[in-house]
Structure formats: C-alpha cells, structure tokens
Length: 182
Length: 233
Image (tube, rainbow over all chains, first blue to last red; front, top):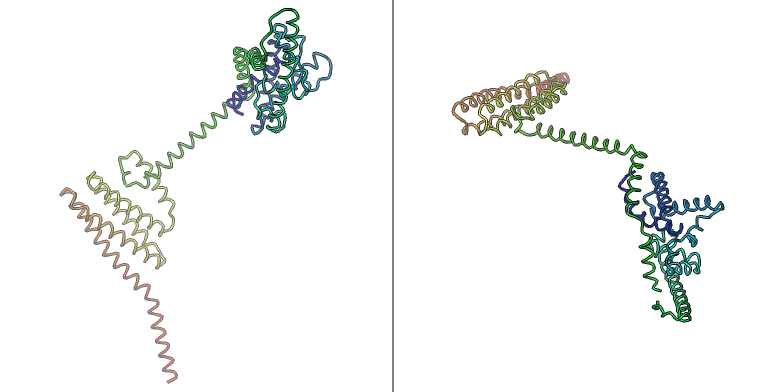
C-alpha cells in the first residue's frame, strides 16, 4: 500500500469521474462535489483490495456508477440499474442548458441516439476517456469501439444539420438573419 | 451549430474547480495516513534493516581488509580487528598439528608485514621479525607433541620451508636497513639458520625412524629366509 500510487490514481481519474457525475446530476456543482468526494473516499477505503494489474480507470468507474445508482435509488425511491446511470441526463435540473440553447439542443440530439451510442459519445467526447480506457470500461476491443463511436458521431452530425435547417427555417419565417452552417 | 466547439465548451463548463480538487486530496491524504498508519513503521523498519545491512557489510569488509592486509600493524586503527580475528582463529585450533600449522601461518604473516614496512617503520620491523621467530618457536613446541610420524615429518618439512623463506626475506631486506637494524636482523637470521639446521637434522632423523620398522622387517625377513634355508639344508 503506497500513497504515491494512490495519488497517481487520484490525479489520473479525478477529472473524468467529476465530469461523469457532473453531467448526470444536471450540472449541480455542489452535489457533484459531494458525490465525487464520497466516491473517492470509498475508493480509498477499498484501495488495499485493488489489483494494480487491472485497470484503475475501469475500477473507479464501476465504483462511481454504483454509487450514483445508489444515490438515484434513494432520491427517487425506485430501483435503478447501474448501467442505466450511463445514459442518465436530467434536463429539468440542467443549469447550463437553461442558459444555452445549443447545449440543450446537444443533449436533445444525444438522446435521439441509441443508448450504447450515447454512452460512447459521452465517454469519448464529454468525459474525455481514450479508446484504451473505454475498452477496459466497456470490456470491448478498441477497434470495435473506434468504429462504433465514429458512426455515432456521424449520426450526431446529421441530427445537428437537421436541427440547423429547422432553426434557419423558423428564423426566416420570423424575419431573423440565418445562423452559420455546421 | 459546430459540434466540436460545442463539446469543447461543454468540457470547459464541466471542469472541476482546482480548489475542490486540492481540498479533496488533502482529506484523502489524511484519511490514507489514518487508514494505513502501518506505513511509516514499515518505512522505518525498511530503513533500519537497510542501515543494519550496510553496517554489517562495512564490518565484514573492514574485518577482511584488516585480516588480510600486511599494512595493518600496531598503531593502525583496524589493528584491534586483526588481533581479535587472529586470536579467535588460534583458539579454534585444538590438535597439536592444527596449532603448529596456525603458528607457522602467523610466522609467515609477521614476516610479510616486516617485509612490507622494510623502508618505513624501523622499530616495528625488527619487532615483527622477532615476533615471527617467536611464532615459529611456538610452532616447534606444538610439533613435538604430534604423535603421528607422517604428520610430524610433514610439519618439519613445512617448518623448514617457512624458515628458509624468512631467512631469504630478511637477507633481501638487510642491505636497505640502518646499521643498527642490520645488526639486529643479522642476529635473527643467525638464530634462524641454527634453527633450520636443527630442523633439517630432525627431519633426517625422523625419516630414518620411519624407515627403521621397514628395515627391521626386511632384516627379519632375511633372517627368517636364511633360517628356513638352513633348515632345508
């Protein structure tokens, strides 16, 4: 048991876990900080049983997901599967979306993708995991994930174009100048 | 809508505060120390073990150097180690042949030390040669107690060789010495020469003694043969 190892583990995973929580609790910073603190305290508690041969990213991700599922269970008084948490976007409490239409639109488009596609896009582009880390978390080969993520992004781009066209149509009806294209 | 820019903005907006990151680490750091408080003890133990190992290595290396080097003589800081080790070695010899062998070894060591300091320490040099000669005397006394004729002969042989070597070394050194020291060493050489002669005589005598039973047996055989011859005749 080495503090140096634990510090390295903390530095490597802190930002990603924070973002994972932040986007699932509707951008509530205080709540995200509380949950992230609890997650890392839990990780410290179990760090002696952590096998350094295995991926630390997948290990802390599992702890975070289970912890968040527990939190949602206690909040909404219903059974929440840990996997359900991966695509859990709370529009109603999404503070940032309330102020910015584009971000709101992004999450709306994201929700139009399949669940596994939402997962891939957020893991890669929102939480900032690389394909190697994603393959550890999702237990799938890197190349498979690369192709699937690429397809999901293409879908998202198409949705963005449709959204853009719709927006420009509505604005021209109202006599407003058109926005820049994607 | 630019997706790339949007994602970048999202990432920026969702970045954790550095203050929170540091605060949480301080909390975890304290928690780590409380939870795994055995760690400092373990580190201390490791350091203590390392220190002991280093000390032991130094002690072993120092002892080996002190024991082997002809430079370590009276007045050297490691001399006490040499004296102690030689003493222990001497006490571990039990039979007369072992003791005699050890005295011869000590004699050779003293002579080598004397040779090493031929041009350096006048007073000590004669002292070392004298001590070498004394060790040889003790070796001879032990040798007298050996019962086995074969071992005794072997020891006398070794003694003669050692004595020859000592005389040779002293003769080589003698011209380099001051007149007083030359005289002192010359006296030791004379004594050693006398001793060497005595030992060579002893060796001859022992060889004859060893041959005596064979000669007796041959004589007896011849007598028996001649008697039987006479009987048949």
